[in-house]
View 1 (cartoon, helix red, strand yellow):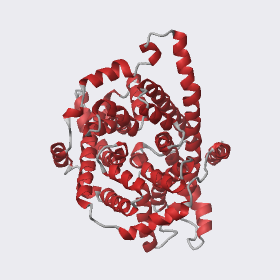
View 2 (view 1 turned 135 degrees about the vertical axis):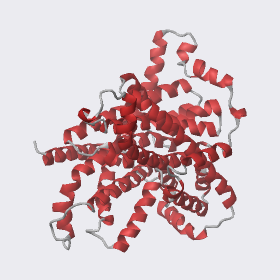
View 3 (view 1 turned 90 degrees about the vertical axis):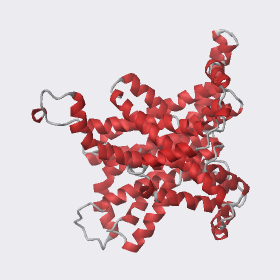
Length: 496
């Protein structure tokens, strides 16, 4: 079977699943006059004022401090664990840890540390360490190709690592880590939605009160932060920023309770039938009730939301990428198109979903729009950059023919690779967006935490991780089937 036939088969399967999922998706607009509210949001940009700038500067600094400390610890842990990633037990444990969204981790650590900076750091460090371990291990494996004939037989493995493998792999490790810091900034910001005093805390408060001019000010501050990262966070400044962050973070040791920690691990997460010395049959009844009423509908809705978002992400990316390609647009248009894509990909899905929730009401629609815009912009940006590196044959004056018969066929394999790398990410975000009211797994997890049913939370998180791990494995199988050429060094930094 040819590569083109395989790409077509995979695309048709995803389109078929998309159509089926549409029948089960709740995409209704429940808000009264939603477009009036959306208009109010955009018009309010003219009312921006700087009266609360002092408070926002402090929140911005806390966002930076948490992201900096988190990424440094994550990189150190990830680099150390990358040497043990070859062991199955390590891969399985890390797959479980990285499959759980940082907001879920934050909700768990809130039970132990309270509304504390430590909660935010741990919530980021755990999944990020697991992600960085996997990526570092794959990067190092790619550079395990030196010729044994050129290496002294007396050379130790340690010497070979530091003088052959690491120098070649280090630029890609640094590049990916710097990208991961941008993700840490987004994670640090959205943890404000669960009560941590970062930008997200004030952003959610202003959203709920309808103070959209304040929302705009915070979003602009955040965009400036993300756009300027390369100027103030790099391999030369990271140590200085790390020390400054440690010295200035708002950490309250008094909020940590040793008794709460012991209670959490020895009582709270133990299934209630076991705690109450009930029979095995009663334990099965307890689990069956959770499985039927929460796990099954939660997984179903998460999959429906994910598959609709994946296809719409693909469509949007295919529409948007020509906007930054020199074969389709002029220099001025590309400049503004790049800014547009940077804004979309820099805005976390959670913030976009929160905005659309305020406009359209509770349904899958806000989540679909958020996932589509954010991930579509990321893939469009990558594919658009790749399109500028192609050697063209057809006349660029006929844009439709150029797009259909030359650009798309050449880029489609890479496009699918990038889409399937994002598939796992979209699944993780689909689960967490349930906190905003969509009945995905996140909805039931948030409800269980609100009811202080931490035993139920552990069960729900297990199935959330299992679902994400399954999608990751399927995605890898699909990429192998398509024989995509993209590797961690060519696309990892933009996709993880």
